[in-house]
Length: 58
Image (cartoon, rainbow, N blue to C red):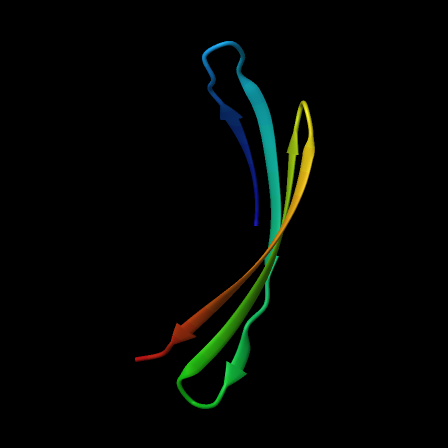
């Protein structure tokens, strides 16, 4: 996933670029584990994020 954004603030508008990747791990027939890695670039700083999702198939 990739996408540019403009963050509107009271004093200044900032350009933000997000890059992310997600991987699907099957946990049996109906459950999924979804680890995600995010990278956000702002004009003022850079952040990294790691998240884990849990999904169920119906």
